[in-house]
Image (cartoon, rainbow, N blue to C red; front, top):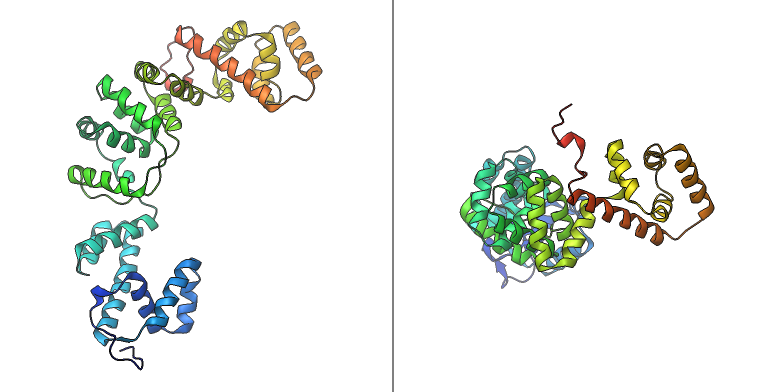
Length: 347
């Protein structure tokens, strides 16, 4: 089937000269208006606009070019289905038949991204030692990006296999990390691809750097946590404080045993307890109250009621003071903020 218009000087006889939008325009014309209108519903308005502009421009397209475009669209859809079913290797082979490795790779990356699969999903199944050895020999910035994409427990385990100096350097860079451009990510992907095999496009998936470091250190061994925090503190004290604040939440106190809560209460200013417990979940407030004497608990409840409505900012400041006391107790070795199920307990 050839697409024809009055002008014959603009004959399209080479599919490789067409852009994606132009191919889509040919495809739209070929399948007819009814099918085309249904397809357009799944596209963004700017995409529809771009394709319709190309539809209006189309002059003459040779039959074999139309056939080639239809074949490409069919193979793309079939490849996507195989990706969704897990047949990534087959999809790669199938798209390879389209000719032009660069185009096929881009197509495959887009299809795989749409399927929700990322390169770091594959990374989760790679041996810890293999990833650690790779990271140890890479630039810390590359390593930081990799850490930002891994599951936290996996990242924490890998961290323990690295040299202490490397641990601190990577976590510092990760904490400093903001949203990274797709161009930079693609460059780093090429480095990883060269060493670790085929990779796909991550997009702008990097989240808050300090939050990522906090989550990783929460899963890491206490010795690694302290070494990394010491290293970051020496370089940027404010950043280290931000990480520490995100490593432990006031609500996490609910997981502490009674003895730990009692030690915390003994170190607290009464005013901070009164303000800090204002408006918290009943279960958390009860955690504190049942670890006090009856008289002290009654007085605390009376003071909280007498306080009346207070600004949320004041509550958060009081909770922050309590958290600082808790971290000080942990640093002195008197308590541990690690969840009990993560520790081996001997009766």
